[in-house]
Amino acid sequence: MANNRRIRVLYDEAAIAGRNREIAEAVAATKPVDLLVVAVLKGSFMFAADLIRAMHKAGLSPQVEFVHLSSYREATVSSGQVEILRDVQSEVAGRDVLLVDDILESGRTLTFAKDLLAARGARKVMSAVLLEKPGKRAVAITPDFVGFVCPDYFVVGYGMDVAHSYRQLPFVGVIETDDQPGFDGI
Ligand code: IMP
Ligand code: MG
Image (cartoon, rainbow, N blue to C red; front, top):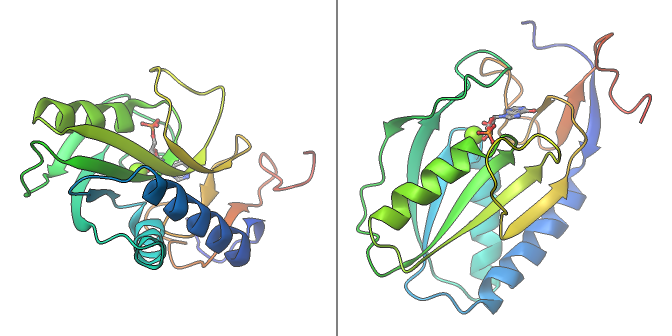
């Protein structure tokens, strides 16, 4: 897909930064023990990078790790299967873990990651998602921290992509198409 289509801004830089500060404060308020942040690659990389800096400012000193999961491949419709492309290398037993993901949609990705870390003996597995799309859940899961409840559009930017394009955008937006006209019609 060409990457020069018009994008409508859904959540701008200032709004995202504000929510990151609030989420970081809320995580700090849980008084986490031996906190390990696990960013779910790839889509969460920008959110995670900003969130951990906000966490530093909120007085936290987490360790930071990555797991690379894939359920989407290059399609925009979930295949329903989750695969580990790169596993966490840290010991998680006895620790508080904060999973960081970009979007909670069917819930399969986050549930898979949560179950994986719980099975390895994490003391507590919390989750922070930048966006939650309601009404799309195939698996019951409630994230601990949510940036924004998002309309049911395929969104891009702030790390999120279509076939690896648009990740660089500093905001979250919607590609304008005839089927998906951004804010028009909301
Ligand atoms: P779930 O397993 O259906 O909850 O899928 C969530 C994952 O699908 C997210 O972590 C994203 O990587 C991807 N995803 C879902 N919706 C979108 C979207 O609108 N834009 C980009 N990626 C998406
Ligand atoms: Mg993802």
